[in-house]
Amino acid sequence: MSGPFDLTGRLAVVTGANRGIGFGIATALADAGADIIAVSSRIPDSGSEIEAEVRARGREFRAVRCDLADADAVAALGAELRTSDVDILVNNAGTILRAPAAEHPMEWFERVLRINLTSQFALAQAVGGRMLERGRGKIVFTASLLSFQGGINVPGYAAAKSGLTGVVKALSNEWAGRGVNVNAIAPGYIATDNTQALRDDPERSRAILDRIPAGRWGEASDLGGAAVFLSSRASDYVDGVVLPVDGGWLGR
Image (spheres, rainbow, N blue to C red):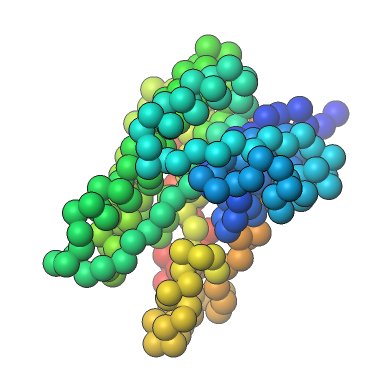
């Protein structure tokens, strides 16, 4: 008998899987047995590093290119995924644009919300609708420490990631009793492209490290265990949770 964390035979969609946190999550899900549809705005049709990693684990792989800032493209992707009987949706893709709030261009604010919040809900609505018809499914959002805090120079990002916590709870209230679990992971400070500017700033990097009890920046692979848990039968009675994976940051 397979264990509660076994994802063999499951189909997982991971947005933003071409690099960073999405790459780490997609790899972990493949390790647990899931086949992967990797969604990214720049992923090649074949030959990507994530494809090599997934296929090396003996799993099926498909790449789908989609610009999550384009509402029509997101709607088309949602319609396509509805026909694929997706078992797991990891809504991970996102962007961040930095400028002080008083000078933050409105187009930046709106773009970040489109990619990090509106498109996330649209995909959850499309894929989740099919999951409800089947009576089972797992949806995992990538939230943030800024789902709990305001951050500095990233008002659009903070607004979007705070909004995701509300989406998670709203969907859970409606879908938990119908076999679809909706939760989120809140990564701490992870060494990815999105945090490169912080890591390149000696003062900010030191201030951040001094506050992390674990004493290091996280790696994308650190998110894998939480993603597998929230995607598996082990979390069948877990709904509406935003799970921090932050090296102890929020407990400080």
